[in-house]
Length: 274
Image (cartoon, rainbow, N blue to C red):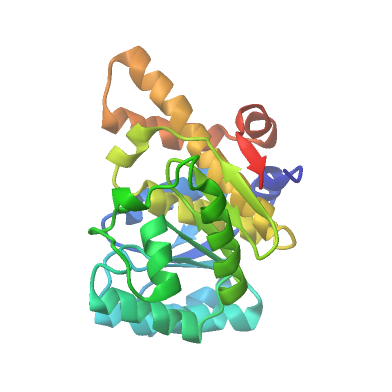
């Protein structure tokens, strides 16, 4: 990975405007602080543009979608576009309802996204307008495995070419791609899926890394995905030592993110160029 990605975040302390869901908003704020950024959550359309104007990146997360915030998302995204700031889309549960799917396509039509991050089921919905998403979790039939990794990489590159965004498909094996290059990331632990919001938190970390490294969006996104997974691995190690559970994993994951630096990531990253 490009050196100094995390150091740049810590030095610049990017301000991230996150229109995210109320299930995970506190953890999103805390992980943003832990990775070196500064969070602000403003989802009323009377201030969405103004807040995005002040910030270095904007996150749009449709996890608890409602008609009130859709206009706010579009206003904030367009304002960030006008200023040349990164805009990150998290299409949580896309395909689970007509509202979610239609909103994702409206967002894609009206806002230019720098990165789109989601599970494979959500990304298939982004691509085709239909999918097998079950709630906000990926369908097991869509899981990325060693057997289908090459096809997922091709899919991610094609989706990037179609949307103009870096695509981050997260799961047991993560795939991050632009239209020509891709990385597979094998960091992480299955226990992370037992905590609500690890994906939402990751999206905010991606926003921080991209805001601080705008010339290296693919590498910054890959580093963010790897760092989050590595924090999960280290947190799980602590859980086993303490004979603890998921609440401890959540706390220790955020702790490790607050300690993460380029050297720590370099030692623990499991990144393969595809």
